Amino acid sequence: MSATRPETAAPATATMRATAAWFLAQLTLPRHGVVKSFDHDLRDYLTELIPHIEQLAADRGDDVPAKVALASVEEARRRMRVPEAAGLLGEVERVKLLARSVAALCAHYDALTGVVRCLACDRAIESGDDSVPYDQGSPSGSAVRSGRVHARCVNVGRPRR
Image 1 (cartoon, rainbow, N blue to C red):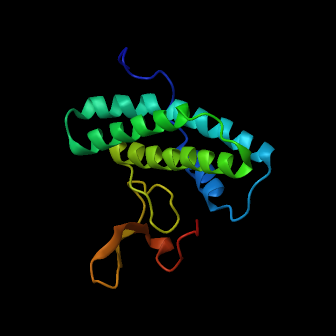
Image 2 (cartoon, one colour):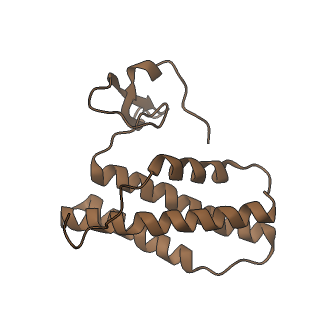
């Protein structure tokens, strides 16, 4: 491994993505302690993801996915500098922005490393896995979301978030 590469193992993006998705899916206001705990965890995830994405983007040079990933890194850093908000609702909204950055950086990490995720179960599709192409259509006729699904997930709905 070169001196410029992060010396840590690849981030556990499945856990990060699940944590962010859970917080974003809450329909009621969590308790203040829960919000503080998620704030801490999401900041730790961003701190771990950012150097990995920066290195992956540097390795790719001047291509568009790398530039988009770096823009997302800068947005995540900006969100991490936002001071604590007044009141529970303000704090929840601030921490939701951190959760969105975690989800975005996990997606960029996958894109920059070539990981393909199943659109139904959100798990990585490994090279030996049976998978099929999938295009979710929209009323206008164009694909809203295209990608691949595990063969075992073809008749299974996507988890709600």
